[in-house]
Length: 186
Image (cartoon, rainbow, N blue to C red; front, side, top):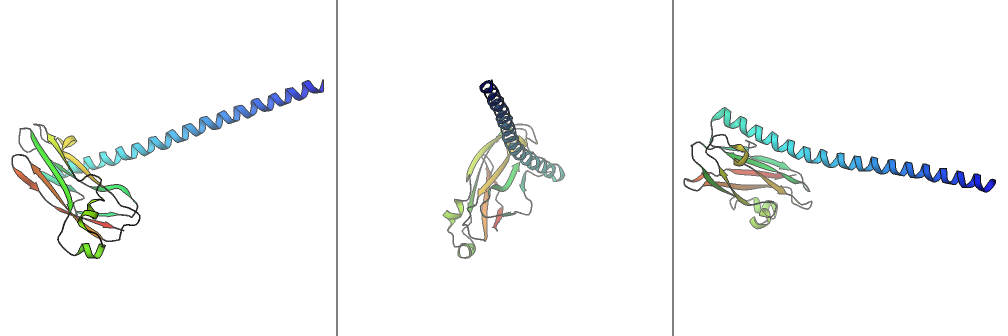
């Protein structure tokens, strides 16, 4: 009789343990899923905010080219990745257009001595240095005319300001914009 009771208590303890472990496993999976979904929604939100800001700038001023932030100054902490600046081009004519863009650290100024970097080393901070896009015939085609230029700043990067030259060219008209963006590493 005692053996049956001990066996019954052991099997009840095992069942309770299995139920608790399964509950913790399900809760863990749920939390991991929530973390990943909130991370991807944050990225989507940043992209939609940038697109809406660029749309507002086009609507307010009727410009063909818009840089964001408008101050052309970006602050990034050392060790951060994925931050940067954006630009967009509006199709002011009713025809399809092709654009290319490129970004490079400028050779002008004394920032190289202050930072202790060469132009090539500063360009390595850029995740993507060049690209292209097409605009359809309709105006305000910001879904394909907006570009986000992201940087990957290593933790050991020097604290300084690097000027990056952005060049945007339309295939038929040539260069339409060439602002300098100042990236300050903090």
